[in-house]
Image 1 (cartoon, rainbow, N blue to C red):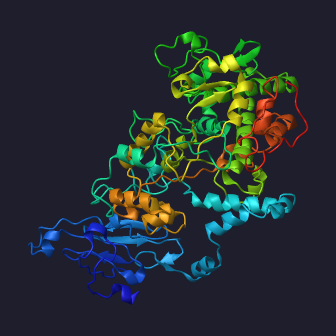
Image 2 (cartoon, one colour):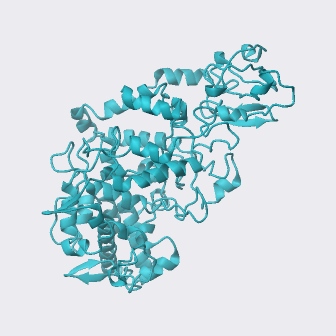
Image 3 (cartoon, rainbow, N blue to C red):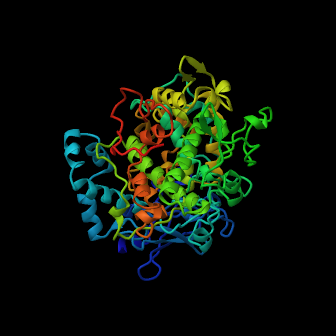
Length: 615
């Protein structure tokens, strides 16, 4: 620490456009290190891995008089490492709060003894991934023993600890505040925004103005040819992802950037029941707990807006009798989204019939509310054991069992992060055309097609989407030209939200930051294009995110018991739920249903329970 505090003059080793300026650090206070800027000052403190304090004006270095400088916020250098919090002190200094980080020093860069020992013994994330995705014979044994539960509990607690709880920041407050905690109208944030008074949009690295968003999208995202997903992911998965996430991704542009209308911040099935009580009441039948519906060709579909007068987003030329009414107003956009809305509508009403048989004394409200809890449980079960299982590629069989966390300190409350919202734009999954039976549909024919669902029926659409391969998400430019404007909007929004750089998020989650564009891309041409636009790898934009499904209140000890779900029968519905069962219990003939095309890598999870409740 004495070496850190000694007054010397150096140059910033990697300071972008602000390198080469002198600095002078000084100790201030016991236990807290503060770097104070000299009059055109910058810092380096390379012996402590310091990235910290920034320049005054270049004018003083060229002979300008003292007092004519303009001090730059030292926190723009993101000096505090390992989750340390940067606090500006006075006009020319900063301090790093290293509390409970496991590190100390001016910039939280010096590991404590136990941290050093842990880091020496802890395998890398790449090693974990390799083990979990190889040696299938070993995992087949593990999945049939108690070790599976132990590993699943470990995975859940480790992942949960990666997420700040309670919420720390929002887009209006880059510091801890009551507003960040209590105002659920905001998305939370994993990292605070880049300070508004920084020299560049990424702090101090990169150009003073980021490259045009359309240029970036066209250069790096626009599909030249379709690249199929190498794991065999299909459109059934792509539409499930969109349908599922639209219950908690509801950006509220009218309120401003970083706001959400999905105040539940998690799996509440607001996309089925509506995100407010008024919308819910318009969609409910108020008889036997059921939702409104219409019968076409002997099968149940959502009602039209004439029967359930809720706001839905459709083009003006589509008549009201063709507009279907569901909980999420945008689901009329794609037949795949309305297909899932129809399946879940049928499931809700089917569960209500089962509950009424068991509990004939229950009124409409109790039937509705209990059915909703059952469907929330079914959703989480399917998401973890089918959807996330497919995403991970793990041979470890993931398991939804809230009892694994009983007795462990756990936060049963979700707050959706704005970074997660940014990350979840998986438009490369969408193909060039949509193939259903012997027909092929372009985007213009597919989007807002209000007759396709009832013309083909749910069975045919499920079968078609399960057999058509989706696109590859990463590594190649693979967004269809019709969807490129969405990617442009994501880039522009991330800049308005002042998200930190890709490398800062890698460091936040304990991953090694990239040192060059070539290391990132693995080839020279794309790396050269990125470097020409961003100049510095630490200025590259990106949007990571996290989600904790076990944070739903139904997973808490107070909720997770048979009585919550109407008894053992309802509890069994949740515990035996699967994608295949969800579909096959709500259609006349069970089609091929999976998240992979037939013959894709891996195998579909088959229904474990042999108990099929009557429709």
